[in-house]
Amino acid sequence: MSKHHTKNKPPKAWKWLHEIIPEQLWLRRTILSIVVVLTVVMGIMFSIGQWYIHTQSKNQTLGTSFIPDYAQSLGVDPKKTMDALLSINVKNIRLVSYWSDMETTKGQYNFEQLDWQFQKAEAANAKVILTVGLRQPRWPECHAPDWVATEPRSQWQPELLNFMTAVVNRYKNSPSLDKYQVENEFFLKGFGSCTDFSRDRLVAEYNLVKKQDPKHQIIVARSNNALGFPVGEPKPDLFSVSVYKRVWDAGFTHRYLEYPQTPWFYAFLAGTQKIFLHRDMIVGELQAEAWPPNGKQITDISLDEQNKSFSPERFKERIEYGKETGMSAINLWGAEYWYYRKEKLHDDSLWNIARYNFNEQAMDKDTGK
Image (cartoon, rainbow, N blue to C red; front, side, top):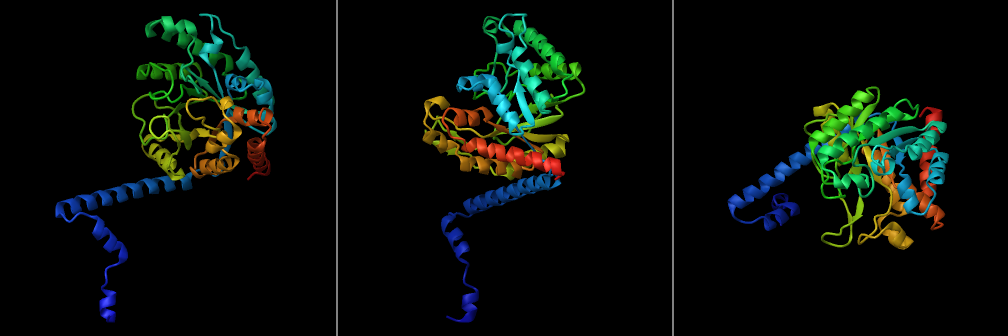
């Protein structure tokens, strides 16, 4: 074979592409056009994501949510759980104000549980994101008192706004209060027991909190891992996004499912918002706990089964994943679970990883890094 002939031999990649694309000219052009468009779109998304990552401050904060009701459901003492978290230098913590817990009798508020959480946070100089509204983190998502079930929205919504007013006015002067989050993943219809997704209710709640306490920023949480862009009111000071990587697929495969999104995908979502809405985004929930299969509770499955969805190795990877999004704050989801594994299952692997990362963050802050 001559050298000239060798130089003009089609590359293997081109030969492979030539073989798989149909011979019809119109179909080839359609397929190639789609490939080009997708390549350009992905290139733009990647570029925006990288831009956002490289323009953000490197002083990322690591935090966690804490929910006493969930700790209790796992069989661990809520107060001891929060004390343990603060002892490993958790300095950024998201708390909830469940309507169902705090107004069991209509018109009578009980702030005892949230009071001791704020007292502990203040004593430890921790910063609090306080979630308010009907829909708040953890199943069943919408936490309404039993007496609400018998009332139409026209009657219970004013009661909810009254309750939210009482919550904001009670804690707005706390030195630990950093931000509010109004509702949680408000428009997510496929998960939870919620029935009202009215935007006007979300706007009314946002405006109420802003009026009662204009000094603190308000977060609105995006729904889930999906591609999308927030439109309409309210336009909060800050957005958050929930990031879940490995879950049980109960609908189709009945297996554990690993979502394919890369860190730069979330950076793209944040960057797009920054460009068009001039609002930043934080990671409101980064999965850091097991996802039980077949609708079971964590306490119903073995440690080996728990490790199939969330193991110590995945915990380390997940923290790095969160940091690689470039977002300024990464709030881990599952702190009560780490303590449960340590206290009830006698496995301190997750707890030690959390302790190392929170202590490292505290040392970096002390040394000015």
